[in-house]
Structure formats: structure tokens, C-alpha cells
Image (cartoon, rainbow, N blue to C red; front, side, top):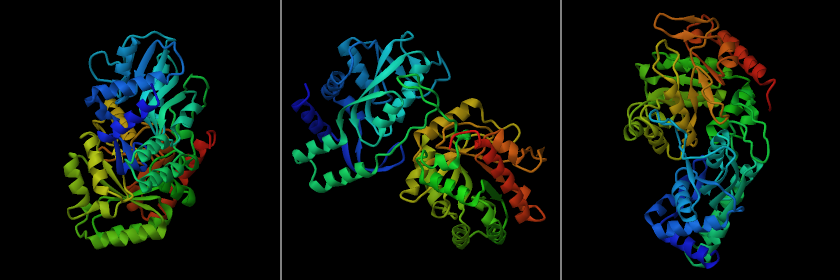
Length: 482
């Protein structure tokens, strides 16, 4: 069926708007000049059927007892295949529901059944990996995955290394050749995409558990990996920058400068700058805040090589947080590299912040857990934060948390409530030591406020925290992989 049918299919996909050219942020975080929105083929039944048939004909084997589509677009394609070929189907949810059967995988299946994976587009291959991981944990055999489009950005080789055989119907290069041949794109557009593919083909997958496919793999948890090794696995440029700062300055200390005046803030930034990787601010506490203050703060951050972290804790709908982030008296997006946000509103809060950031190098840290007594951050909420982060790696840098909420090495764990001695203050703030925060709670970065800012000698105290926390990090990774 291939040949002309595939060309006609590609041209029809282009006609209905599946193939788009411009500037797009992919799930992996990279900016792409081309995007494929295959979701809309559900509105074109005949075309959906053609795509499904092309994919079925590419299957390397014949003895599959199940098919499974990768959410979301892989599901309707797999449904058509299941119906046309009379092969039972299972569905892996994006998240477990908090009611009903609470199953992660829906459908009837038995251990050791062989399942064929169906995916629309692969970039890094992470979505296929996550689905395969879940199915393998349930005892199914998953060796093959047919994808409609391979963007040629490392996904196929990433999955092959994990024992998953990837069979694409068409590659990005082949698709662009068809569009060029039929005059749907010009030579400049073709060359632009070709150059993009050549320079963006080194994506990676962060594994979470061992997959017992063709090949066994050794998987290392975030806590066991060095900052140096994590530079190559993270998607976010600010994460890479932060890891490099921590390594260069040998510090994983963030100081919370919750002060009342600009002079206090700037003085602390200048004194403590050589010993920190981040300065966390609460500019809404300051009585004399002006944008001139932020300009001086940016200059000090450049001088001492640290990032600025505004603890705004955005927590509204996307449209509102976009305005709060970019406007108002504080214009946070113009000077803060990182901001905090609550996950409670759902994905809109992240997408709103990202839309306001536009092309600036910005990111957010989700508040997953808090250090105060009686905090209402349940396990379900923590898990929800992790899922949000995994779906928005282009903007989420990590989590504010009191425990190791994620083993994913792409995300940085920020732990507040740290003092040299374990204690509780009069308002319910619980403190742990730097060593306990890093070794027991999995912190990558410790956040220290009053323990330093109210000390008789803030600089000497900051140096003590810096040494204790970084030494604990070095001890933590000493037995891990680098």
C-alpha cells in the first residue's frame, strides 16, 4: 500500500494543517521550526484509517496478542488497528484516577502476552518509554513500536538502547522531501528543517525503572547522579546553567533574603554572592521596591555568578498569572530567572507563565511540599505536581519539597527549612540540618533564610552552610554513577 499512498497521505496531512512551520516548543523543551499536530486526524476518519493501515503494514512481526496506543494520538490510531485487524487493545492512562478501579492500564490482558506499541510522532522517545515501562511492570512483553513519524532527533536510538525496536512509517527528512517535490515548501524551508535535524539529534530519555525487554539496563536515581552528569540529561537551559554554577563555585546553597528594604537586599546579595548559587527573594515584602533595585540585583548576580529566584508562588489561572508575571509593580519576568508556582490550578499556571516569558531564559519551580507544620500537600497532590512537571519540562526546573518527590534527574529538588540545628520556630516552621536535607531528604539545593540573614556574621555562617551542604552532596554521589 505504501508508495503513492504514503505520498498522498503526507500531502493530505499538510493540506489539513497537521504539518506546521514556525517556532514551536516541543515536550522535550527544544525550539523547533516545524510541528506535527496529528491529533486533528480524528476529525478525518478516512485519513485516520489510512494512517493506521500504513502503520500496521510496517509491523515487524505477526504474532501480537495486544496493541497499545501511546496517549494521546496513538490511542485513536491503535483503536482503528484493533478494530480492523481484530487485535485486542489496552490503554495506558496518563495518570491514575482517584476513584473507580484506579487502574493505570485499562483492558483485558494476561502476563507474557506480546503487545505492539503505536505512537504518532517520536522526538526523544520518552512517551513510548513511559508507556512500555508501565506495561512491562504488569508482565507484558513489549519489543516493537511502530511510529508514524520519526523526527530523527535521537528517539529511535534512545529506545533501541532500551531494547525497544522502533519502526517508523516515515522520517522527517523523507516527509520534507515529499513536500519539496510537490511544491508545498520552498528550498529555504526545506534547508531550515534539514539544518535543525542535523543539529538537534542528541535527545535523551531519563529512565525510572528497569525495563526487561531485549536488553537489561542499569538505572541510576537522581540522588546518585553527579551534577556534572545531569547537565546532559536535563532539558532546561537554566537547569544546565545552575548545575554549572554549583560545580564551579562548589555550592548548592540558596539564601532566602526575606528583607524589608532594597538596601538590605542589595547588601546581602553583594556579601553572600560569592558563596551561593541562587538568591531567593520576596520583593513584595519590600517597602521601597523599584525596578532600579532589580537592575542593581541583576548586576550583582552577574558579578558573583548566581541566579535570581523570586518566591512569588503564582497560583491562579493562566491568563491571570501571565499578567502578574509580566506586569504590575514588580515585572518579575524581566529580572528573575526562576519563580515558584503552586500546581493547584493545573497546567494553565505553567502555560501562562511560559507564555509571558516568551523567548527569555526563564523557568518555574513547583511547590510540591512545604516545611510548615500541618501543610495540606497530600501524596496525591505531590504526585500531581510530578505529572505536571513531566508534561512541561520546557519550563519546569524542579520542585520545592521536603522529600525526594522525584527520581527524575531532569528536575532539581529545592529544600527549604534548613538550619545548622534541627528545630521548630514559634509559627510552625520545621527545620532540618544541611546534612539531613541532602542525604536523607534528597535535596539538590538547600534554602536557608533567617539562619544566615539574622546571624551575627552572615558571610561566615553562609560559608558554613555551603561547606556542609556541598560536602553532603559529594558524599551522596560518591557511591553512585557519574
